[in-house]
Image 1 (cartoon, one colour):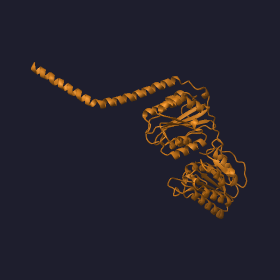
Image 2: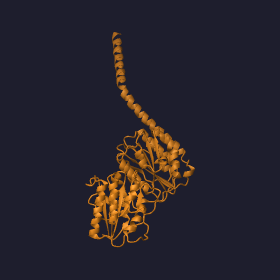
Image 3: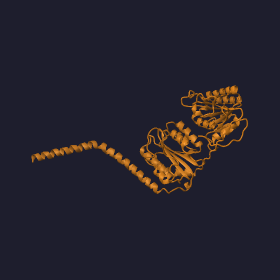
Image 4: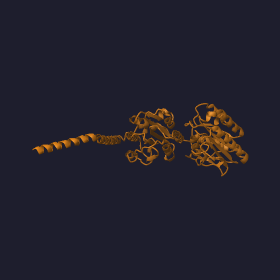
Amino acid sequence: MHSLTLWLAVAALMIAVSVSQDADFGFGIDDNRERQLELERQREREREREQRERNRAQEIYPGCRDKVADIFFILDSSSSIYIEDYFKQRNFVRSIINRLAIDSRFTRVGALTFSDNYRVSFGINEFRDKPSLANAINDQNIPYLSGATNTASAIRYVRENVPFRNDITRAIVVLTDGYSAAPGATASEADQARREGNYLFVIGVGQYTDEREWRAIASDPDDNFMFNITDYRGLDRLQSTIAQRICSLPPLIINRLQSCFVQGNGADVLFVAGPSGASTALPIIKTLVDNIQAQPGQVQMSLQVSSCSDAENIPLSDPSAYCGPNSPNALDDFITLLRRMRANAAELRDRLRTPNQVAVLFIDDQSMFNRYEISQEARNAVRDGVEVYIVDLGVTQNRNFLERMASRRDAVFSVNDRFGGNLEGRLLRRMCDDLNESPFNVPEVPPSK
């Protein structure tokens, strides 16, 4: 009896120790289990929401019926986005899709995610009906990536590679928390995308106090194309707004560029852009150069651009071959580049006796810092016989100086005049008259990218 009592006491003590150990270490186990359960609950809620959206798949807004449009979503998947919020982005895209007339003849949708780099989720012509497109919004096609926020690279991919249809409504919808790795490059890519005929929507999430990057991406007016919500739960309030707004937009008809055929005894084309304007100027320069046609050696090109080097008196060609971040001219200010252009033009006149010279000056606020000197140097170039054109990259002060720099009052063009026709097309038409001895009619060709 005594032995039995002793054995029971030892057993009770062992059980108590075991319970105590479980209590000591159970918090970590319980925490892990709770996190796993919460993640599973989140996924289950997403599955339930998917099913609800499938049930509502036929609820197309009246304004979206038979709407011919191409829409591409750019979804931020960087480390600053919590995975739970990333799920909300996917649900948002699915909800908008269910309000559209998805069909290869009407509305097409594509998407990509981005962080350090971009990952195409599905192409704009990959799914031709609503059920298959809605089913494509899943973990496999739209995974959570994490990493930095390379918004510029994502917009550039969409602009250069997505096979948008011509002369229809084209919309790019960017969802981001706003902290881009390269705001300047992002603004430049967005500007180029707009000039190519795309509407850009921005949905900025979070308490991002500096909205300049979002405004630089969005089409004008900002009130119609830029949305700021406190957190991702606010996406639910925008589903109807975004779908209806896209469906109400008319196509942006971009004028087809007309190639400039240079005749006569030859010509020189000279471009000038300072450090802050080079990234915006180079795509415009490329489009202009791509559409100037001449016999070999008939037209010389010079790039007095801060990011370019060894680019004087070169054949018409892609400027990117001469330009890059390591250029020795990267820090040269605008007045230095302008003086170099004028000296280069004088050398060409003396050596080659070219009858026609055209200079295009890309001006922004930083370029206007020495506006009196710049204006005087530009007028000197005009007196030398150079036809000087001004491209306003967004000058906000002392705009009256721009007309003083140009050969004529109507030789000033603005990148912000988005509804006045294609900038490159209007500028090239005017340049072509000056590159030739007399204006002439030319056949149409599509604009280059």
